[in-house]
Image (tube, rainbow, N blue to C red):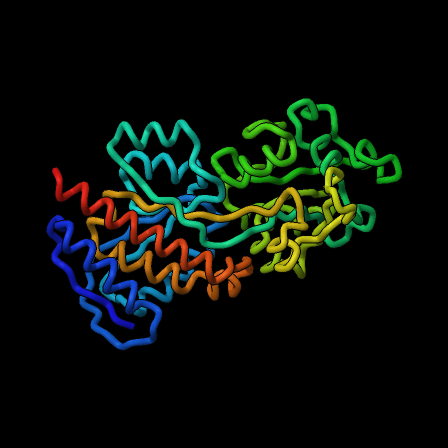
Length: 332
């Protein structure tokens, strides 16, 4: 695979355009090349997107061993704060950037491109010994998680009378997580709106540990973390009562997430790349490498690949972003 060496100086429009076109034609074609790239790439954000990005970064380190790729986990919200302040090059995001974050980026002179990299299905899980929760509806999930439930909905039989008269212990994404934002919007109906008396973490591994050791637990997190730990977790099928096809309760899987039948908890996953970061040739090269390999590596770590034509569209979108940034730089 061809890796290109560029000057670390600010690119001219011609240089950036050439870089984009050349790397697009070479990355992913299996050609042998040099490994002259150096520098560093700082990535942070979503714990849900982390497994995909870390898998890509691991492969990329073999292609460009002198480029230091650092992938942190501070949740989508935490990553966005760093990204919009110009502290990192790329942010992993399990939701779209919000208006407040866009404003902060603009105030700091940062433009960006949003790239879709995979699909995910938020998975509702219980302990394997749970033999009563065979399915759950969106309305029941709302009853459990809405703000009004705090201090009120505390036992399983308050959800369904035939379920045990025992405490329900809740585990879910922390408020800095894009998973939290998406779940609350899809289930409660308003982003960032939920009860606060639950075990929260931006690290999905903490939630896995909690649910897998608590027979009275119910939690939610990204599909890949369930897939990796399915021997010690039980996923609950979700019934979207508003579905028009009467599909009933659906388990998350590669197929149901990809075809959208696992509703309303299927979602896309994103990368955001800063306009300032593409002054660094290693970032441009890494993103091209990412989009060439994301489909295969996403599936390896338990996510759902986008169709090939979507990855091609994302590469074209990134090329146009690089070209536009080059033109803007040249006009300054």
